[in-house]
Image (cartoon, rainbow, N blue to C red; front, top):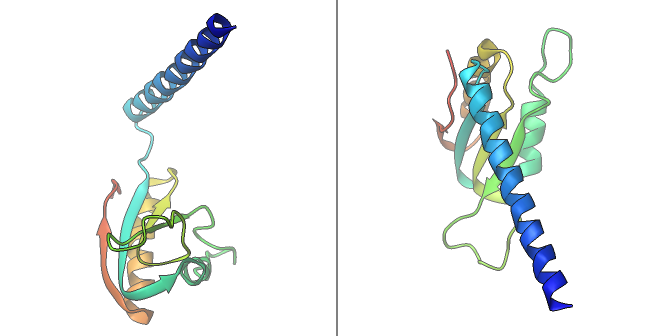
Length: 136
């Protein structure tokens, strides 16, 4: 019995390592093809903000067709160093990461400037930092 469970464990580990290697290879090949990079921004506020509020503000940015410009944006809260270690996920934070999936390089550059314009004018924003490549 033990021999079968060890073989299953080894097979599972090899499968996971193979998947990781394949993902790294695909990312490397796509980066060589000139696929536009993710636009990733770090947003820091003076006070805690709710991720839902931030998402609503970003979805309020409409394109010429009336639809949200950045409906594919991914938002994440970044926990404070002093935050309780037992709390893994939260909806409120002073620091967020906003990530736009690759596509048109001009759209990535507009994303950075649109978010800056939106949040600097209406929110207690401390800073916006580009932490992922935005090709301009």
